[in-house]
Length: 196
Image (cartoon, rainbow, N blue to C red; front, side, top):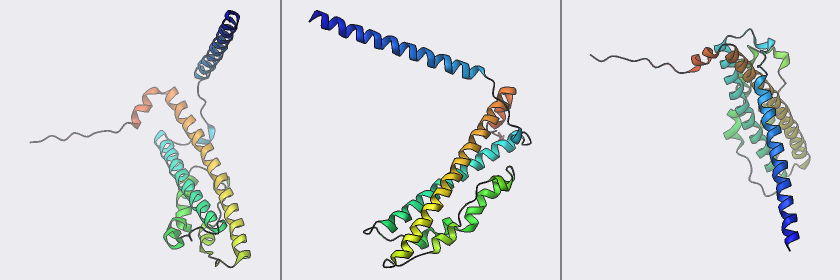
């Protein structure tokens, strides 16, 4: 019995030592990462600090919109593939998927990124107009396939947006590292008014 307790104690001690080594390695890796100064990105150097912040905010808004579109498409796909699913209220969601809505967010990005570098988007408005009746199995299968492709294209675009967000964030960090006082310009300014 005592030998069993000693064995358990040795196992626990070995686990504690292993955990301590892992913690030490992680701590060293974090310290090494902090010691490497951030590098500015040549493709973003033409932007002012305010322009860079605006671009990053536009990317974030666009990422939110694309995530919303993906959820809508996934929901529509569910209503097509689930026989007992409730039919989608297509009219209520058409404005969110209009060509104007889709292009609006991208136009803000084109000011920074060349148009041909931005992944293409499916024609969501045209896709949303398609409403095959419940009995039209072939048309419903075709629509389900096209919705799946559109969702995949949106996923690709969203991944690209995440990459751009990371690059813009890294650029901000590099600029703040080079000029720490510049981060103060992001703080809101309050104007005080005097009362007579």
